[in-house]
Each structure stands twice: as C-alpha cells, then as structure tokens.
Image 1 (cartoon, rainbow, N blue to C red):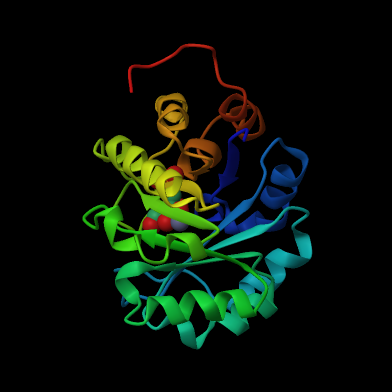
Image 2: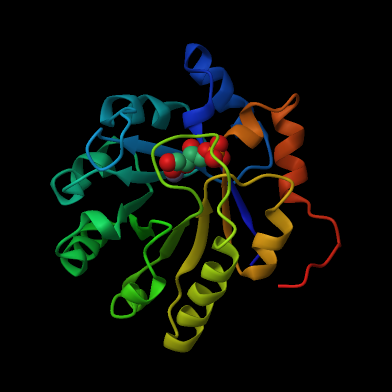
Length: 223
Ligand code: DX5
Ligand code: ZN
C-alpha cells in the first residue's frame, strides 16, 4: 500500500486548532493523529474526550487516537463515542491485552497496539492476527519534538516479518521524530503510516511539507 501520513495535532497551535485542522483537511494527509496523555503512563498530560469531540466536528479524515494512558480499557467506549476511528493502546499499559483488543473491536473502531522503544515486537506474537495496526514508537512517548531512535529501522523490519509470517493484516505505524530526513528509509523498512508532529507544524509551509512527506523521491536506501 502507498504510505499514509498522519500529522500529530499535539504540535498544532491550539489557539487556532480549527484552522490548523482545516489545513490538514485540505492537504494530502490521510489521518489526524491524536495523542492522549494521562500524566501517569507518560510524564505529560494532553487532552481527553471533550477536545476529541470538537476535533471530530472539524475533521474530514479519520481520527487516529493514540492512548498513552493506564487502564485504557475503562475509556474505550467513551473515546469511540467522542469520534475515534482507530484506537491504539499501549502493550505496556494492558495486563489483559487480548481482552482489551476485543473490547476495541466491539466498539467497531480499528484496533492498534503500540510498543515503546524498549519493548521487543515478539511480545505481540499471540495477538498479531487480531490487530489492525502495530504502532512502533520511535521515541519514548510523552512529548513532541524528540529525536528519532535509530534502532526503530530494525524494529520495523522485525514487525514486518512477524506480520508476514503469521498472515496478519496489520499495518505498521511509526511515531516520533519522523520527518523528511528519515521517511524514505522508514517506508523502505516497511512502515505504512507515518506520524509527524513538529516536522509538519513547525515547518514554514505545513501543507507543502505534507505533500513532500507523501511524495517520496526515488532514492533507495540500504535497509
Ligand atoms: C509522542 C507522541 C507523538 C508526537 C510526535 O509521545 O506520541 O505522536 O506528537 O511528535 P513529533 O513528530 O514531533 O516527534
Ligand atoms: Zn502519538
């Protein structure tokens, strides 16, 4: 599949959120990436359902909701009701991950599981065929604008092999420090969805940056 671009609204200007979202609506971007942080799973707090409801009223593209929260199972229905199209929970935050994945599916949202940089992808072996998406974190979650962790390339390749060897239909999303400097290599390694926060919103012309992220050069990398 052609790779998808999901600008992360965490880096948007919240004084003009609707305006920034409208720019994404008009751009070549595919999804809105929406980061929910609880101050417990990660050392930062962002926003909850109330803001997501507002985002949903402006969005003309799917809301990809990344839950960086403990006990996400308590709030899945509420986030779905608020407008989430894809619900991703963290492996590290779920004691009964299999059950949580089934709960996401019951809401009819797409089900994703995220893994932190220290978590090996093998832990998803027994649930991979139940997943619509694996989110490979390429920074430690909690903040936008961090540096990309190089080991992510290997991790994407391992995730891709796990998907192929099990016949899973899951796609691979990469989140953190993604930009024009590394996107081609990430796609070559097997990434399907690229989240970009600062790379889009802190650039001079965000809409044009999205276009560039979407339209890769033909340059090939050793992967
Ligand atoms: C980090 C979040 C990311 C973040 C990415 O915890 O999950 O989605 O917004 O921002 P950049 O692209 O600036 O690293
Ligand atoms: Zn995220």
